[in-house]
Amino acid sequence: MTAPLRLGIVGAGAVTQVAHLPVLRRMKEVEVVALCDGDLPTARALAARFGVSNAYDDIEELLGAETLDALLIATPNHLHESHVLAALSAGLHALVEKPLATSLQGAQHIVKAAQKRERVVMVGMNHRYRSDVGTVRGFVQSGELGQIDSVQGAWHVFRPSRAQLGWRQRRAESGGGAMLDLGLSVLDLGLWLAGNPKPVRVSATLDRPGGERGVEHSGSAFVVCEGGESIFVDVTWRHIGEGEHLGVGLRGTKGAAVINPLRVWKELNGIPVDVSPTGASSRESAFSASVRAEWAHFIAAVSGAAKAPSLEDHLTLHRVLEAIYRSAHEGREIAL
Image 1 (cartoon, rainbow, N blue to C red):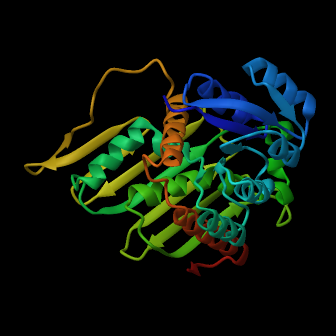
Image 2 (spheres, rainbow, N blue to C red):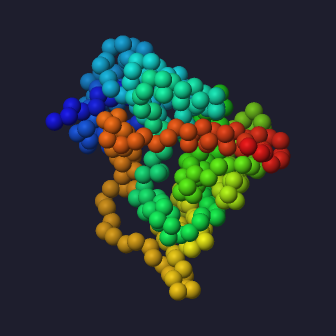
Image 3 (cartoon, rainbow, N blue to C red):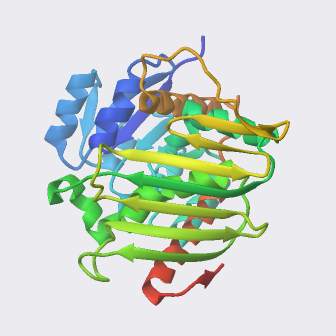
């Protein structure tokens, strides 16, 4: 029997508490051996809650004291780069919450270090692992929807208080607002589902309540790719409506698809036909299932049983994001 992956976790915030630890404690392939957070009482309380043996308030102390195979990095965005590089320097694999870094230059540093150390670095893009996303990607890859001409994606949430936003509203720690927090995932889904076309020009508008020195609470971006494909992204932290909304729609030459809820149409004998798959529903939420599948992929990549997602995708994402912010600031289209 293969020994479980010995994992340390850096960052004891909401995503660790709500997403990762509840999933990891049900996975026999992983043993969480230590938690680290700048707030040591929080780290200790969370470790006790999930049966984790040790807690630390300094990543260097964690790396020096524990024998690990990998780190989960779920700290504020501005710490991702230094924490991933610390993991790689210690010879560890890393799963890091999005974004990979707060700049293209930072992301490039990580990619070079991962290649040099020959370690797996994966970014937590769990939406790729949703079952409905996987179904639509299957239709695209089989050619059943034809050439994908456009993708439209939106993620709208309501975070009314400063407390809910926390460090995300401070540019020095977040690197950006709603477009980085939400738009990065939507943009990734759009490009990934369309077959990773090369973006060539970008136009965008962002709503910054605090002016240029603040972070955007809402925004829209339009990305045109080399083959003519287009990606439209609309995000907000100030959604006024019934619950949170995350949705993606694709238009192809032979069909169309919508994610959340899942619907697929194809043209058959000159008539649009609903060919949406049906099946038994799972008691596990789509979110929890996507996190579990993400961890399964990471474990397989570390063991050599699967190929990790390409970090080059994240260099592309950061190039597009930098163009989005520049377009919004300068009020014009930006060529990549």
